[in-house]
Length: 395
Image (cartoon, rainbow, N blue to C red):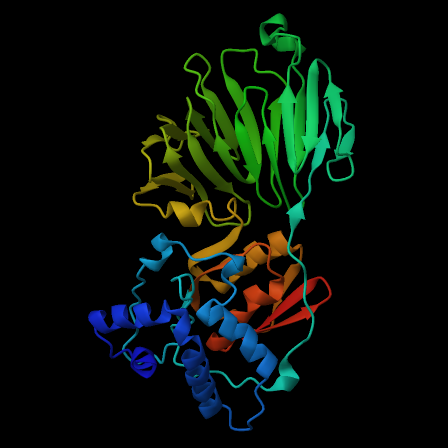
């Protein structure tokens, strides 16, 4: 059945049967042997790297499963791939249905001579960020696990989370002019959580920031962000919540949503999980009207070339995977994936020649070293070389 899958000749029923077989851990050894035989058929010099194969195999059958059992929800997930008629498609399947790798070019299993493998690795990112107070003072939140203040606000920093409290001073006791602003910034390889003065919870991905008042004393709550941020906004009809990123503004009353506004991505995305939000552009496109749309749960607003488009049926699990400790990509080309790698592993990325056009679907624990991410490219014939804090992609 594996060969039939490779040849693209399996029916939908046979594909589902194969998925069920892959879901059974008792088949792991059989799958290992079959994959080894298929690789050896392509390696004419009999010199493929056994250690590298073990790493790839663990991704195929999901032996470690990120150190936790697969959920029944994942076991029920069935992936469908449209194979090109004349393409020999390579694939990686995790028993829980997590990994699926497809390639669009005609290419057999790659030859993996041991001499081409670079034995080096890079650790994943971690909880780290910088807090900038209203007076410009910067505080490293990793080295300052403490409680401090800025004006009338008490700030507690512990366990990778920053919590703001007004203490004994009621928010109504200060005027709008008394409010000062703080900024929390994560570097490449960093992430952080914080609770704003109103109780709204915020998760910052790598290379992201949020600027906010230390007290919400006006008739609205407004923050500015860069990068990628997930919000769980406390409901307050009298004080709507506004998020500004580049030319986009998001207005909410109380809801859960994710904003991806990285400057190096081709579009900005606002994805709604719960509640309702209005997404608008801050500038008029035709000098007569302001573009705006209202999202319903499960929808994603995409902004590109100064236009808003709504994508229904957004993949919510994939959207917030980073918040839940997973690096996830869906129908992503290698440059899209490597931008995630660059931000989370704090590395630069270079390409030798033209970047491959292959697209991938997959998930990797954010606690894993970078080699685990790079190993999924093996069956697509894409090699990566680690040179200090740089990864070189070799098609």
